[in-house]
Image 1: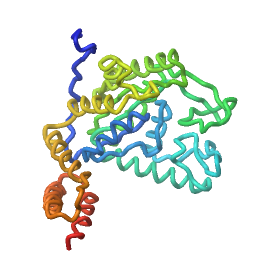
Image 2: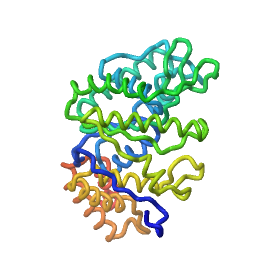
Image 3: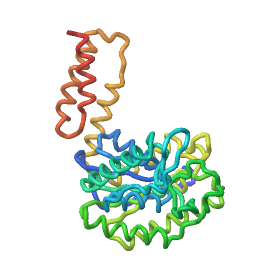
Image 4: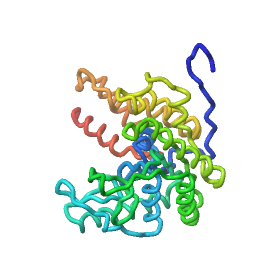
Length: 330
């Protein structure tokens, strides 16, 4: 540690693949999966992000992947009505229907889309949030979300390293047959689960981190990105937390994603990302006089840049926006 920096910086090993502008990523798991996934999308990497909402515990996450791989549908015994909507214990409340049949159809379509995205994916990014799991007593099942149901309906279990590794091994065998070229990256979310209490949170993160270690040792196509260690060991200061003291701040999120980009981006994607950042800032710029000749020149330049990028990334929405703004000069 450099005493003057008050930090313990460490080198993040490069991941065993390189993302390009044409790569496809599926990012699933806790809310920190959305931190990484949204920033990947911000760099125009085609990313499928949490189609079943945030899923914190690994067995619930692996259950959804299993269903997508095997073509299974939802377990309708796990449907419940809440606030006038039907939801399922297998997913976040973002997945819902007005009737049980509608919910079943929404769930199946999401599984079908996820399966197609997994078959086309170059990287599967799984972010594990907690090893504490809620187990429904009737019917007996680990749930992805308790949907604020009475605590008497559940038992709270601490998953073991063996539980996580066994479930992953079963899933990995099937995934390898479907998409052997896809790399799997595991992360442990650095978000602290305050509701568990700090002692139980520490136990939970220890289980997840140990499971990730053994999985990367046992499976050649699986690697680990140290998002957890970057916040806890590198930054290691409440300056890098949000006001709640649990989530990383925007500065910390950007720092961790920057380390991910260094470890995973190809030189081509790094160059593209720098170019795209300039275009994005120009798109966000709103001049004092939108009818000025200078602004028209800027928009025409932006159109040329976007047209040049169109073959490398999905920029149709941005191109349409620029065309619409140029109509004011017609």
